[in-house]
Length: 504
Image 1 (spheres, helix red, strand yellow):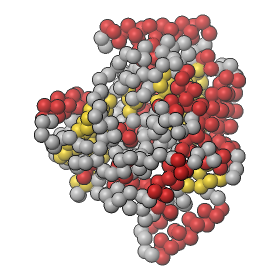
Image 2 (tube, rainbow, N blue to C red):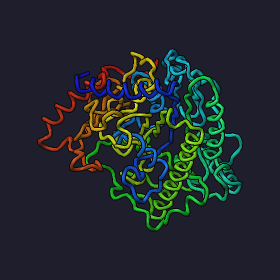
Image 3 (cartoon, rainbow, N blue to C red):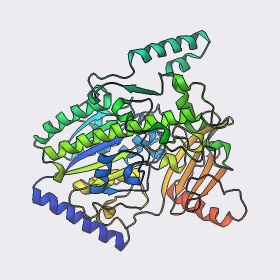
Image 4 (cartoon, one colour):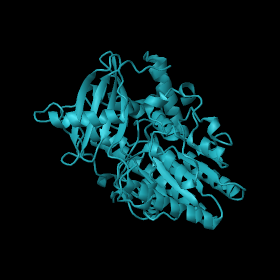
């Protein structure tokens, strides 16, 4: 660490430590996770999206405007964030691998806080749904009691659709994966929706934890705005569907190698086809959705974002009412971004900016940077060491992220010159891993043949001139020097594989 970064680290750490000493208590942690929320919020300048509570949190803490996940799909991203380790270290690259099968002795973020005297409790989706990770928590992860998903009408539609799929000879796996419609407007109060119900339950737990003798690590994970977009009608009513702006680049990046989207996954587009009213949607290779479909999906997404924003507001209000705000670190993050028609996609699961760039904000009591955004490049593996530093908890030496405490003291500082992501692909009968690096001015991606370690394809995007990443420059004349320099930097951030990346 250079002298400038060390100075900022010391200053901010002293501020936080001084506050903790004066209050006589170690800070609590309110850890808010949101599924599939992209950086289209009021605090990011999106005036057409209604997010006053998240905006208020961003304005009272430090909003990291250039934060990147390590893999743009749920399970790997969350496993990486919660362990402070990159996907090639966790060996979690898909939705079916439990991190305890690959790194059984790892000490996760909340587990580490438990070991330091914190009480750690989780509500909702923190890790991937099927892997709640019992060692992380003092109580089993709480799911909402009651609440409704699809209406009875749409449950019947789904049953009938699945039966027709069976009649048509569809594979059993496809029948099982099929879900109801992608959107549903419900005439019901917030607390009848899963996310609304669990917010109320988390607030009751907050009261209980506040009365305890130890500091707490309270994690609350929200399902929306993940598909299906099921939210109360009042949130839909806040938007005029006809005025919702549509993506201006509904096509694949020019010159992008086919492996970037993959012949099986279509860059994750298959996820939308698992909803009965979009089962026959054309892939991004064939053309865009109809304008009516695009508006319906974007309307549902925005309504879901505003619904979750209201739940975040309830949590923040709960902190205020209990007198906890001045001694509670609040962190909000989404596991990755999401496409709303960009590159023809309605999903995540690529190495592009729209998928890897996601909301992240931290409000630390007494931090000098509160109220100012940071444009520094940061990564989700940085959250673990940052929270340790802020809470005065030892930082495990095994972590692969870097503390962002200097940025909480001075948001204009920097802690790293690049952010790294990756995504695996099956393509043309082969297995590949795409390694991506975001610098100040470029996104550079190398696709590696997992059987040989050889470079299979490259992508290069000029973020200053082409922020939507619509044109791959890698194969154009005059890029050799830039590619050579970026490739060297990429492999200082990753350990280059030379043989197949296989599970143990």
